Amino acid sequence: MNAIDNVPIQEVFVKNDNDIRLFIKREDLIHPFISGNKYRKLKYNLKEAKRIESKSLLTFGGAFSNHIAAVAFAGKQNGFKTIGIIRGEELAEKALLNPTLQFAKDNGMLFYFISRELYRNKTSIDFKDDLKNKFGDFYLIPEGGTNKLAVQGCEEILTKEDYQYNYICCCVGTGGTISGLINSSQSHQKILGFPALKGDFLSREILKFAKTNNWELISDYHFGGYAKINESLIAFINRFQSDHNILLDPIYTGKMLYGIVDKIQKNQFEKGSKILAIHSGGLQGIVGMNEKLKAKNLPLINM
Ligand SMILES: *Cc1c(COP(=O)(O)O)cnc(C)c1O
Image (cartoon, rainbow, N blue to C red):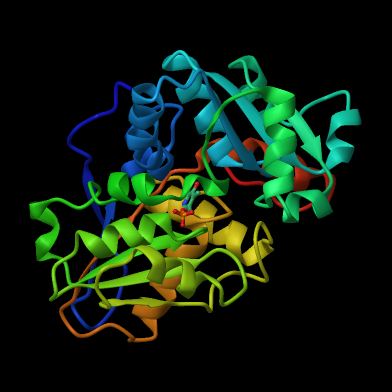
């Protein structure tokens, strides 16, 4: 899929009295369209889909989903048809698709818009049978792309050079990324996950895949829930961009970095620690988020 091999690591300076140093692994640069962790999560799933000679990929997501955009592009590039089951049937009637769905459509994805209620039951056997009747055989990729093969891909994010860091920080949506990081970490390292949504089901998800217990979820920085943002988060993202020349997304990486910087300033890391934060991408969603912010007369994210 033409990804880069050596993902750059960039130090960002955060003022503190405890010799804490913060570094960012720029997984957002891994591929121009299959962003960050979505690239990692798709890698072995695409291999498997090819191996079993599947012709189409079917997956699920919301209207701004980075995963939907990634599957559409990766599917096209690898010769698969793609089908996106999208939450929210009202979207089908909108004449204009948002930028994420327009991108997916331009890459050949076929949409099936369903109600929020049906979406909640998307893993039921009945619904899967319906999908088979409608679309024929397909290779199913779960919402957010998380399964065993996705975790295997995320185990390749950390390399030997990263053993020098005391803390590895990442965003958490469905838990696949953090599981991969946990499995490839060293026992002297601690993995901190910053959930982008409320709810305590995430630990159970991670326990399905993670092989060691050197991890913790930091649940203080979800800003009210998935895709909820406020002016101080936007201000943080814009300041981070002008100070460090790194763009963050408002759903995941912005919240994580806000949390890390806050914890550094509150002295919650051991003195002299080196922290590696994984920039998992997600920048495609900013255009769509800015449209929403504009409609609400809120400040925009500078790009
Ligand atoms: C999807 C996504 C995540 C969440 O990853 P999970 O493996 O689902 O926990 C984190 N960051 C970004 C930018 C994402 O797009």
